[in-house]
Image (cartoon, rainbow, N blue to C red; front, side, top):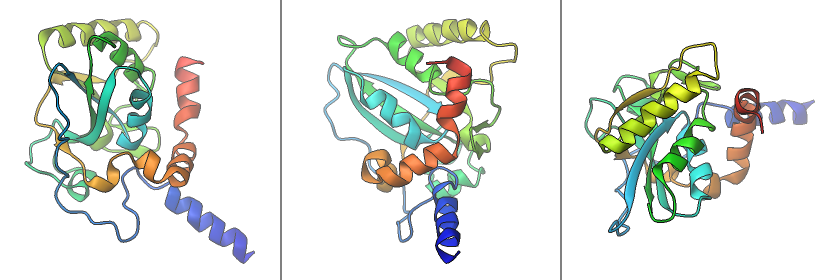
Length: 210
């Protein structure tokens, strides 16, 4: 019985909201922006709920140089995770992608974005609720805006419910604390348990199929 109870407690910890820090994890100011050279690279910014879960589908794409978890579309400067997770800064969890447009197009990235979110959910994604988990495409130029709006119109044809995903000009992006970056690589067991417990893949299957 004791073993079962302990397992349940462990699972409960694993299924808490995305971004809940590990015991002892520091929660200081957001981490420094990537220092990678950006010459010849383009930028894309997407919010798809838990930023832990939005890095993997882009990291595996040929032509993606880097993904950075962070906060955007809010009012407060230099927000921390604790502030954003309280839902008082106006930010949403997001990923910023540096990619080589000679190898992969923005249109391909947008397609991957849509198929990794629930576009019908308002101010939440899967088991995470609050405006800090709203979905969005934050464009960096007019061409990105055009593609975002065109694809949202196409996605809308697939469903009977309204599309909740916002499309706005990119605002200041603040990289999240270091322990959030590449979380799925640093903590693979806890990440997988969180993702499964949150029902993310089950819901994506319902929405998009294989």
